[in-house]
Length: 274
Image 1 (cartoon, rainbow, N blue to C red):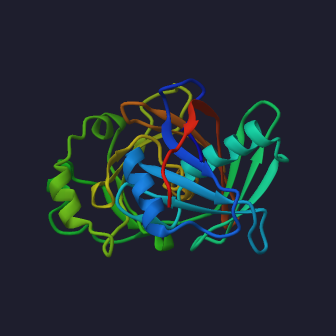
Image 2 (tube, one colour; image 1 turned 120 degrees about the vertical axis):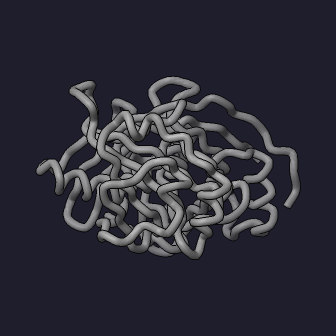
């Protein structure tokens, strides 16, 4: 079976967020345990599997972290669209049927940019779980829940505070098990005019992702938050991880468009049976 590692939300290798992509040729899903073992072997934040047929869509898609299956993943969806367009000449628009997030549409343009059309996750203010500020090492100005997305969104006063975080990830994992939150988004306004409007980082240690390099799905909450706060529908976010990545966002009613690029860095064969 062919498998690729593709850096998403990146215009060069070894930046953005790497995802493994398996484009399946069968009509049914492989054994879930096998897909989970492949994801554990790849040991990336997500491995995407895609079937060629799905009711009401062009393809079906599922995503696995090294330890569990997740309901939504932006960067691995972008990587899958990149693989389809590069390897199979797939038409520019692909509709993916997901397990829990409905139909997700990708548009690949001639210049190589890919737009994800995802459901928006408008944040709603909520109290911070006890001990989380101490685990992160910073006190947020405000804390939000993100509905079906399942993340906590914490707003810090400035970019330096986001970049300087050194969280106790063991404590964060204990305070945010999957039944409490999928992960923790930390964000702040950009410090200047370097080409982005806000910064973020994303931590999901209970899901096997200590810090995610660039989290497309988190921007379905970040985009409506910052668009409302800054008064503009179209923005650019910088995820300030070690690898970094830019995500262009556009709020379109109850949907968010996320735009980025992708680069294939590894193309090989998986020698493993189901």
